[in-house]
Image 1: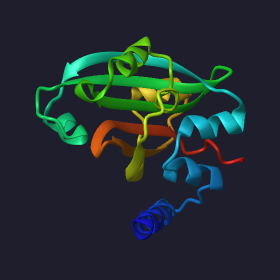
Image 2 (image 1 turned 120 degrees about the horizontal axis):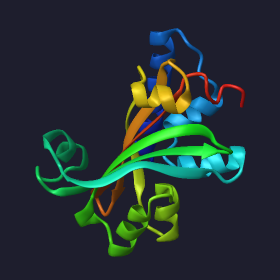
Image 3 (image 1 turned 135 degrees about the vertical axis):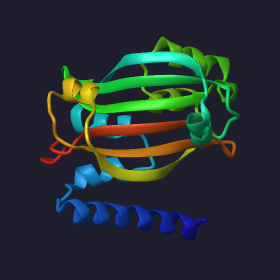
Length: 187
């Protein structure tokens, strides 16, 4: 298993190098950490900035369409929680995230905390001592949509990653996190 973990880390390092080469950019160490960590982004931001806060922009239950069902490995039509949040410190947006969570894989308590909204997923997992691991699927750059332009007050490209959180060998949630390419360069 250690060999597999080392290969995964090597692959993530290679992905960041490829991203730098493809876009002719130099990522800061902090950007690399935020893009490749298999730990909690919330915990990293708390260390860097003090306790961050989270605001839920949208949250609702929906039936998984074909694409979302594949992301979380459920049948089409199964109920999932869609959640869109912004992590911030002193009203400065830091990271935007969306998640898809199959409700059948959450306990009632975890679902209740998700619905209460403004609790980061990393803190929920920690609060309930949920043993899990993150598998980063992609690290990439994408153009901001209108919502991201408004939230971050910029038109610049976004650094992004998506990953799954796995518990008991099943996908507990799929998450995509994004931030402007100029963020986290000074640290």
